[in-house]
Image (cartoon, rainbow, N blue to C red; front, side, top):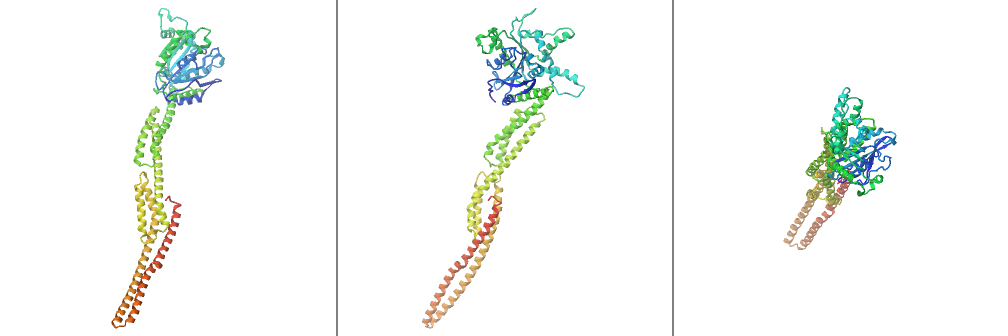
Length: 580
């Protein structure tokens, strides 16, 4: 998602009757954000003006609800995603939390979890209070002293090491906790410290966090929240805001024009926003993994479900679970990329094995880069192996589809080429002496035409051989018929030759006899014999024509009929089983 379009905040975590619940619509929106996210959360007592600061960070006058009465408006955690104003291709996620210490809630047990969620989810945590940073303000921030009781860095180890692990974890929180900003609203004092004179806002905060020397419960209680802030949040910043407007205008703060706000308040707000925009980092997990909007949605759901189950959120477990979710998604997206890249060659099926293999190698490389881009902590290449296996499965499936496309193309081509030859078969064209040679000539012409056709694919030779195998039976019938008819034709021709020879001999004898009669002056008898000779010649000529018409042609006709019937029967039976 290149740009984030959220016109108003949405509820991310609902707090209904003391039970936390993640909003599906909010996480669905987050899942569409593939950019890295910078997450800024604001926490603080109710009715301290947290929502106004978040609206200013969003660059809007209104958005997060402002409570103009003593009733807390924000329930649970509300979210507003906007394009980061300073970092291209990044999303700024603003989280406005339910006011802490609202007595009207009756049950404040979720306050600690709301505070913990803000710490766990943020890259910058803003704590908002009013008046001054004094002991009372720090005592109200008692939630910070309970963080170690609600959050774990590592998964629990076997019994006997708990105390050692707790000390180790306490020192590790600093590595994973967000930057800390304390905003003091309605600050009317001078930034002056006795014996130091005028100080900066940050020096004012550090002075307020100084520890008392000594021992005892009172000193320990005084030092505990200060020590926790110093230990957990070494990167600290403070901003003080004077009253934004007159008391009469405070109730309608979000509708006031800039000119109605005090210059000092506007200056402090501008400095606060600029600091957040420039110093807040991308949200990361344990191990330094940058978090996208999609990953952030999984993180929110994971932490809330863990809290609701009565367990402690664990940063190490979160990384493991997130890695599993993200790597599974990376596999799916990598496969989708591979399928998308292979669409072009798929549309050209059938193609040669070289073409599909070359395209597979290119697409596999692109898809692998996509997988690597969205995977993380795949230390043993477990998901890379799963991805590679799935890509190979996709490739083999495409190879099968290409073979099937080639087979269909070749079968259709041969079927079209064979149609004319099939008609000749049915008409008995090859049922004649020499018919087998005619058949072979036509069949070879089909083969030549078929082989000259392009884009037949990988099954071209196999389909051709199957075609020729299925034609072999009809070829044998034609050959047998040809041999029978040729043999009969030879016998008939021989009989015809002998008959003609006998008639020639009879004519020769008659002509010799006629010559003797002429020599002996038997002219009348010689003429009669001449007529007889002419009659014999005429009969010889007629017998030659009649023999072809009455004997040879009917024989060929019978051969055609028998061959046609036999082939039609065989072809009809075979076509139920073959495509040609």
